[in-house]
Every structure is written in structure tokens, then in C-alpha cells.
Image (tube, rainbow, N blue to C red; front, side, top):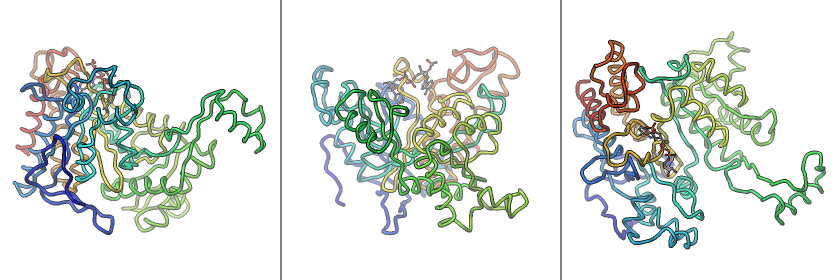
Length: 461
Ligand code: NAP
């Protein structure tokens, strides 16, 4: 593949492209080029005021430098999406003109071809939050990227940090990573409006198949829920491999198979099938633990288990330490990842990644919080922790650990200071500072102040 030419981007002159080997494995150079979409609102730098993405990048660079003493470094390639892209590529365009464009025209305004070419070629990206486009035809930059690059796995690690005000008293036991299938299930958009010709046709067809008005009214709107073995297995494969790489104790298949046997139930069955066929030496099923091992998993083996989704939602609250990696279809995963994040104090620190076999995009899950734009005030933690996932993806685990430990140390320090009473100096942003008794938003430091404190911890490690 030859390097693309761009309308408005300038490719880095240094650094090497991440590529895929013929064996399907990533070739990660010591100087990878990573596409960086800083984002809108709090993600963007405004004049000389850094946004949260820049703050996060500074911490990631510091950790890489500390871990590898200059032998490894990331070369960031700035590309654009969202409102930032609209004002750069179509500065004069009005909202009415955007609305008049067709879906692809709207997509080009908010997600220019330049950006798609850069991501297609360099394969790995870090993304700040983006404004949801106006217009209606082109609805979501994130969903478009997922389907266009087949980023089939939405990865959401959730961990409790000391000092964070969490609503659940078991929050300190939460250390989970959810793998949500991104490309199937009711998200495929195969939906038919109540009363439409297509819905009527489908109802007639289902009547022929023997479904009467007891289960399906003529007036029903209908959505289709496709779940295939290929797409389930590739997601579950990635989850089990992650558990192996990170030495996690278990992988739980979360499903609603007691009701939806041929979709959610099949997801579970395909999961066990794949685990036994491809990872037999590294895994043991929960049934085998009880049947063959007296209820105790053999050392070093990952336990593959499954839970019905409703049970899972109570289990994550009551016994969070029994769950580690979770693999689940799209809709369950959507609910579950926010629910687990909420247990530990909300989505303010929720990192994420959308990963496929050809490319990977790492991103915070919160939005652009526009009221804080250009104020150097918002918490860069979620983008930063998404950057930790990026470092792990590159296989740079030493640098990833330096960042995680640095974040943990700054929160722990704030917690210790706050416990001594009001008036102490906290080095966390406003949203964390206001959680401590006797402290308010005013006691928070800037986004860059928080980032600098993490860098201090990294350099002292
Ligand atoms: P939001 O941007 O997530 O902000 C809601 C509130 O969450 C903020 O007012 C702030 O709370 C808090 N918050 C979010 N990020 C924070 C951070 N980094 N540091 C501290 N506090 C943070 O949600 P929204 O206002 O509903 O959405 C704004 C825009 O973002 C919309 O265009 C939406 O479509 C878009 N969005 C994008 C993504 C994405 O790109 N992945 C995701 C969600 C939403 P306080 O007011 O309490 O300080």
C-alpha cells in the first residue's frame, strides 16, 4: 500500500508505520506513527490553552521516555474530525447547507477523507471526544469508524481508584475489562417501522412461518438481531487472548441465552467451543473446575464461565471481585460497560478502545463537555487511560504501568490529603476535588496541572 496524499494534512517526516504481518500479527516498530484526533470542546487546544488530549499525550510521552530512555517513542500524526474538521475543511458552511447534503456529504464535513486515509494507512489512532454532527443523515462518527474499519471489539477496562467517590461499597473490588461485540446484534440497523410496507411484508412472511397474533401484532415495528458464529468467535478470541496476556483469572460470557437461544445462547455455546478448540491448554471451564478439580481452578488456568445478563447485573454489584474479563454481545455490552463504570464513580474516568484485525482506535467514552472548552479545566483521565490501552496494544507494558501507577498515586495522594481535613493542596481536577468532604470544585487544579503531577510521579518511579 503506497502512502496516501492529503488535501490538508501533513504526514510526519519521522516515525514508522504499524503494519500487519502475513500471519495476521501486528508489526510494531520502536517509533510508531499514531493518528491523533484531539477532538472538539475539551479535547481541542484553544489558542495556547491545552485540551485534555494534549495533556494526556504529554503524560504518555513522558512515560515512554522514562520506560525506554529514548529507544522507543510515538510519532503523533494530527488528523481531524467533528467540528474541528468542519471549520478546517468547510469554514464557511452553514448548518442549513450541511443539512441539505446527502449522508456521504455530511460525513465528509465531519470526517474528511484525509482522516480516513490517514487511519486506513497508519492503522492505529487515539481520539478525543467529538461533537455529534448536526444534520440527521450522517449520525455518528464513532459508529461510522467502527463499521468502515470493522473495529469489531469495544474494549472497556474499569478499575476503582482510591479516593474516588463511588456509589457502591464493593467498588474497590472492581477490576474488569468488558469486550463488547461492535458489529452485530440489534445495532445493525435492520429495522422496519410500524405500519410500513416492509414491516407488513415481514409480518405476512412470519405468519406463513406460523407466528400468530398472540406473539406478533400486525402493527408491530420489527428489529432484527443477527448474531453469527464468525463474529462472536473473533470477539471472544480477542477477550481470551487479552486474559492470557494480562494473566487475568477468568473470562465470563454474558448472554441472555435462556430467552434468545439461537442468538445470545449460541454466542455462549460458540464461546465455549472456541475456548476449548483454540485455548485448551490455557483454560478450564467452570464446569470442569467443579467436576474435575474439586471446585478450585488449577493455577495458571483461565476459568471460562457464563452468566445470564440479568444475573450479571446483580453480580457486578454484589461480587465484583469474581469477574475479570467479560465478553458479551453488543446490546448487553452497551448497558454493562456503563453500569460497571458507574459502580466505580461514573464514566468520567472510563477509557475505551475499538479494535479490529486491521486497525485500532483508542478513545475516551465521555463527550466534549463544551462549557469547559478552552479552560484547561476538564479531567484528562479518560483519554489518558485510553492511551494506556494504546500502550498495551503496542506491547509497551512498562510504559502503560508507569501511567496507571502515576494516576493511581495522584488520586491516592489527594485522598490522603483530604482525609487530613479541608485546606490541603489537591493535585486533581475539579470533578475529583469536589468529591472530597470539605473541598469544592475550586480546590481542583487545571487539566495540565493534574497531568504534570502524574508526570512527576512517573519520573520519580
Ligand atoms: P459530556 O460531554 O460527556 O458532558 C457531560 C458532563 O460530564 C459535563 O458537563 C461534566 O460534568 C462531565 N464531564 C464529561 N467529561 C468530563 C471530563 N473530561 N472532565 C470532567 N468532567 C467531565 O456529555 P454531553 O454534554 O451530553 O455531550 C456533549 C457533546 O459530546 C455532544 O455533542 C455529544 O453528542 C458528544 N459526545 C461525544 C462522545 C464521543 O465522542 N465519544 C460521547 C458522548 C457524547 P459537570 O458539568 O458536572 O462538570
